[in-house]
Length: 360
Image 1 (cartoon, one colour):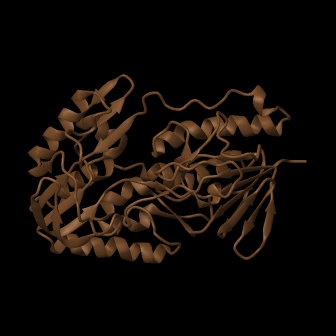
Image 2: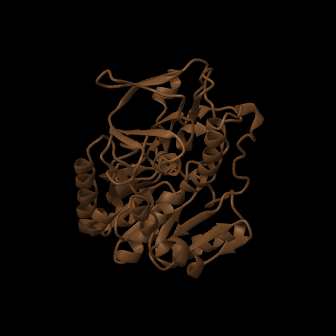
Image 3: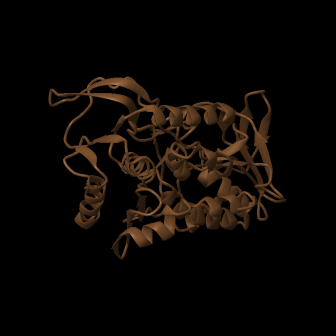
């Protein structure tokens, strides 16, 4: 009999893994929402909300042989998952890929895509009427957002707050120096080495005054938090012998298993496996998972297979609007043209619309 694979979570890892394996295993993909949110494009949607219809992708056509179930999973056991209505779905293998939370305009806080649309459009309206904009957090999301807003609305006064003394210290100095230069050339004020002591929300934008750790304050018409992701791991934490980190991620073994259950796997943002919470990480995990499940379905033992190996130096693509930015690849740092062609122009929109069998 064909082995049954249940995937909990229809984000980047879950959706692609389900489609990749649906002709090799009996695949069921379970997701609470009726549409996939293409996160890399969401930053640009706050300056161009007309893009929303192209980046919110319905699940109906994703699978041709596998099964898509719109539901919430409330419990994972060794050989089954339980849905909110009490339905049990049996499985030979289970992958928990419940992802992470982030700012409210990047990822939906709830299950309603219509509510998420409203959040994005409301933020766009606030941005249009604001003169002063402060972005709290200068990682990839905060820096990219500053670049997008400056590119589309150059009249805005933009401040970017970094708790570190520099940007992207984990990458070669050339990358960080170039990004800082481009941000400053766009008249973006970067405040280094300070923390906000009175941040009202880590997910929702608001207006008001920010008090900084150096004793200064900033008044802003719009304050946008960009303080990073937190893994959604409540399902995994209920498994026997699971261990959660401060950022919500759950420890996994060399085969991406988070608990005493030998056939339950955990991948994507929720797994503490040595990768960052990025789509680039998913692009490495999916081929390994695909090869592993095909081998297991063919009768191989997991211990006979090669363990997962995370990125040593993962690529990073950081557009600052459609035409500028920097990219880090294993072979070096690249500038505007490479970043524009790889990500900045299209933000991988066509790639994921094709995945979901939608027209470009």
